[in-house]
Image (cartoon, rainbow, N blue to C red; front, side):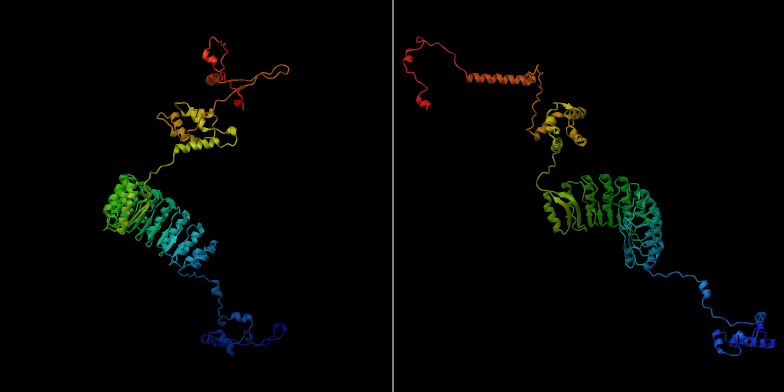
Length: 592
């Protein structure tokens, strides 16, 4: 193998090999290749038939001319596989943690730890997370392969139209989610139309919460097909969506076609008219599976709007829980509901609190509990409603019968009196006018009231008097309420009544004395002093002062009168008087 072959340049002649010898060797080589084609085996075999090319006395041109010459097959190190390599699709488990992290990496967002920790469980609670579109994308794509999550809570995340599209696509692929909470997601009418397709194809969803989503009547119409075709939907919440009488037709069709809904929440809408309620409750009569009904906060106050509900309660045999609280029920409407509850034989609990009925109406309603001893009704919720003390024996009877009642309070034997509005207004006026610290700016509201004329005046005249008295600190709302308290039939202000009421609260109020105007005298000539000041007194006061001064002088004259001198002679005095001794008053004893 190491033998050197002389080249032509060295002037040496190469030994010639005949063609027969070459062909013979080639035939032997072909047979060898066919029998043992492993190049490594041939390399280490060290036979005469397998030699290095340096051992063959052939030039490169001679080898190329021989078409039958074959080299032994070479082992492929993987070059073809490397050039033609196709990356296989990743295989994920049924949890999807790895896929979620990979999608977040591709979208350049940070994975949410709550999602990573919740994927192996059965609930993902993302309430108030404020999810972005990319985060919704990563979540929905992960849930397409997840088979563990049964409850998805996306409350208050404000889903956009694109987010709703991705959510709907996920619901079509996912077969494990049973409960979907979209409360306060604001999907609106556009989102309802997109979600309708997912509800139609979803065969596994059992509970759907669409409250606070601004659906409106049009949005509910767009959801009609999906809600009718959802075969496993048991709980539906569409409260706080601004639904009106127009949605009664849509709900009628849903309740007639989908007879699997057991719980229906219609609270905080506007089902308060007789025609709409008639369609709604007639459909409920045909639905024989509804167990829970919530129609609170719908403003059902008129008896005509309550009558369809009463008729439904009389005939239904499946309804177990009814919430009709906060509907402004009172008087005839409350009696109608009480009649329906009395004739019903399936209800277990009723919520009818936060209404407008009186303590007597509350007693009349509570008296239905002891009368239903054989019925399943065990709880009556009358939250924030009050009773008189006469209800105490009734409460004892209810407790002894094993039933419960919830109420607000029991009134005592006293009369409830509200605040005195007139006094509050006068106190506020007095406070505002006496609030300034400077004495010159302070005003007395009582003086202004007593200065009003003894007749009715218009509001414009009243405002003029306020301006004349320089009263500017009373705000318009306060004056408006003051006008309303003392307004006559002619929309004038009764000043006489205002004075009377004011003096009732402040009897010591008197008008101030009239102001005294002083006039200064003219200056005298050449340094002479001022003349005496003249005081101007009103006529009425002047006459009264003159009378008082005259009466005062007359009394003083009577007290201090001195007898005039008279000349007394002996002729005029009787003898007996003259003979009597004269007593001197100024004796020494008296002096001492």
